[in-house]
Amino acid sequence: MVRKNQTLGEFIIENQAEFKYSSGELSRLINAIRLAAKVVNHEVNKAGLVDITGAAGETNIQGEQQQKLDVYANEKFIQTITNREIVCGIASEENDDFITIQGQNKDNNNKYVLLMDPLDGSSNIDVNVSVGTIFSVYRRVTPMGQPVTKEDFLQPGNQQVAAGYIVYGTSTMLVYTTGHGVNGFTLNPAIGTYYLSHPNMRFPKTGNIYSVNEGNYAQFPQGVKDYIKYCQAEEGDRPYTARYIGSLVSDFHRNMIKGGIYIYPKSKKATKGKLRLLYECNPMAFIAEQAGGKASDGFTRILDIQPESLHERVPFFCGSEEMVNKAEEFMQKAE
Ligand code: AHG
Ligand code: MN
Ligand code: MN
Ligand code: MN
Image (tube, rainbow, N blue to C red; front, side, top):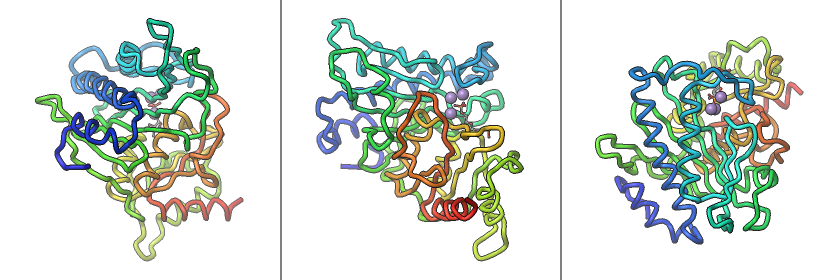
């Protein structure tokens, strides 16, 4: 049952049976994620006061400058989840390779693996703009009790059992799905409790917001250029409004509430796009579909792509169904 203003703790317990969490393991994992999110939230909120802004001095496997909060959030999530021995492996945007969690008794009978973008939109921290965390959960495919292998992580997004994000915005929200719709919880920071503030979130069928980094326009494929021109044309309900925060989580969250499309296409500079299939696109695509929206690479459903490597990138078109359909039409026409 979904009751507004229920706490996240109550929600997890009450929906455990309905969501068929066989052993309560997934509930424990969501619990650990909400705990780590509170710790990260605390640090994000005082970022201007303590020495946590700025670059950490290292470059990650993505070739990006790691921010101090990238490193902090990554450590907190890994620590919280590893200590509880809830999953058998973790892959993160910030780690070169996946982590194997063997468990103290060596019999690791946990069946889930976690994939995450511990801090999304990290270039926004220093300027006090919303950032987020994205997570994705799969059932392992290799036999239990043995160390996980790459195969457990390289599953198509349609195999996800849960996915969600935390947006550290004007308020902090945890939004997630276990394949039974999407629910959003807002943190009351005074008492450290999340309340169900956005039950059964749905993407409007269409909208009037388009989110794309137009600075790269000259390098976009023709189909994307044509779609942007379509968004800007004076006709019917157009021109649409352009909104681009530069934090996928925040841009997605706004579009899901108001109706809109987010596009990160490939370009001459980013020949495969920029966003990571496993840590960003798959979880967002699962949430989008569960909320009645759509996610594609311009031609194919994101969730049906067979990943080939941990950090692979993919073009991303995601949002209100009719808007993504329209963008796909332009992509196909320009082929
Ligand atoms: P991250 O901070 O996890 O590396 O992700 C950054 C991503 C995404 O959040 C955002 O939408 C996009 O990069 C912005 O990229 P541009 O600055 O190229 O527009
Ligand atoms: Mn990054
Ligand atoms: Mn990201
Ligand atoms: Mn990140």
